Length: 401
Length: 80
Image (cartoon, rainbow over all chains, first blue to last red):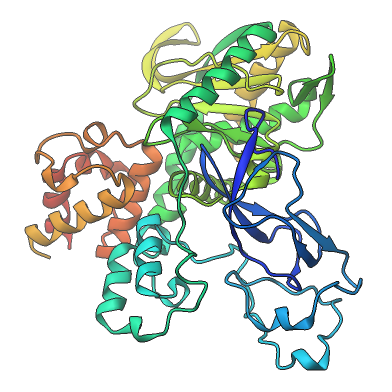
């Protein structure tokens, strides 16, 4: 049972998406685990073949408990080939190196190639309804946001008689239950934040950043593009922060055992308010390596999944830094509380048009307050100040983002 | 599209974005973003879906015209 954040003690295994004998590749979703934060898709960290499912569906397990055993690719899976006959609910990519299945198992249905984005996008309510009707969402033409399958698409398909398709035995339990519990989440936020304020000596810095250059650049970029290709200021903030972290690695990592451990990559947790109350901050991995359009896509996808279910376990496990952006209707600045064991959090307020002095003249400019809360055990204010200047410098060169 | 169709489409999209709300009950002149508590990402998703379903381009500088339900209806009825 993976730890999906420092405040998680146990999780409930809701559903297996693989069987003994399933070949899995790093990144494949193998199970759904439910915590008070909702349901998460557990993705796997290595290639191999599932040899044993140790945990049962519905079981509540402490963090660290054994869920399944994976045999390395090439190793003989310790299971009868029979299990491989049924195609798993979620298509799993077969590693090319995998031995051919024993003759007894033939013909093994070959999973269709999986698009890189994984499963069909579908709204939670539509997924539930599709499950009830025994409709395979993968067969539907989504007309919703981003081409996701909506409730209307499912109902339309049902009206056209698609439900005639016999529901596969796995279809009914495939309905995603979200375990999101606002009271429990409140409690967990209380615990994590109290620990943060008790243990972490925060220091706070802020800078006002003139957004006229980056916003003018973004408007020009967006003008020639269709809505789904357009950028939001949030993505500029995110990328500029990632590039500044490259220069200031002492803010990117963890405080553990009384010392700072720098992170291997820049995996930024993005704070997302949930509509039922509370918030989660799943990570986008290697933010510094994204081009802006693909980062925007990743962010849009992350927010949609955070609200609709489908955040991956790996996204909850390893944010190395957090960014909170209050957006266009928020307050003017945000001084965050560090999420332990991270050592810093960046806040962007609402962009406001205010008087600003340029070359000795007062002029109206769109301004944003960028603020940093950092752990004084891991870094000093001088470093924090340089980091904020670097964020500003990257924002002023939007082309370099 | 008729005005009623546009209103229905916009309400459908918004209830996908803010599932616990009833966008059909919105006052025509109230700010959708404040009334449904949606952020700029949600609003962009609203524009994306409107664009996909109606084919109307909706450039970014026109976004303020779509902040209310009456505005959405007027804008799309004039372009679609």
